[in-house]
Length: 245
Image (cartoon, rainbow, N blue to C red; front, side, top):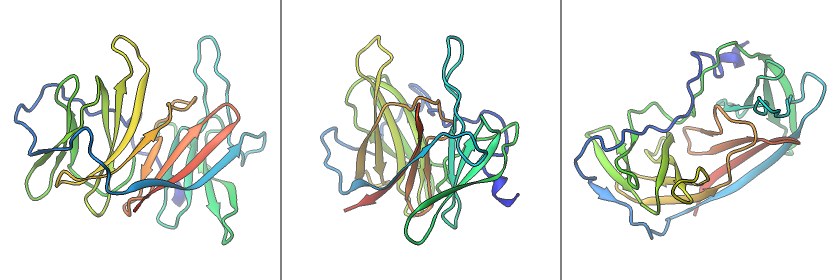
């Protein structure tokens, strides 16, 4: 089906941190201060819980066991017409989430899930990237019309830095994970929206990773709307987050 272009190109392309530790030695062109106040806020404009069920049009779930992780919907994509697509490896299908004029959700099977899905997080095509430059520092390297480096505020040991995507306005949406304590695996997660001038457009604390390990937890539309998928023990949560004054 047409919708099934979703997540279909190559295997295992996770939204992984682009960490080139200590690479590219030159300092950033501008750095965001650790205490910088964001220009705008990221506000939740939609929050839907989809319960698991036994029929084909409900999301599937496989509970974790001694030697296996929880399995459930693990990737999200949004089409130009607003249809939200969810990858369901339990039922081996792609589910289409739509909303009527009153905002009521409906879920239907859009097609089979290919055996080797690929993950991508949306936005516009870009060569912008992020780099981890030290144990506590990282940069967003904006590409286009010449390279411009924006330093990410350091507020503790940096676990990972991941670029979700860039919107049509050129704003980079970046997930920053910092270790709570050295020697521990627990992390605090934050979403930063920055521009190539070093402006901190918005920042938003992210919850702990969902029970089901996602291929795509966050999907950015070209317009700068962010969608989040979190599959838990009782159902699948779909959120829409927008940058607002």
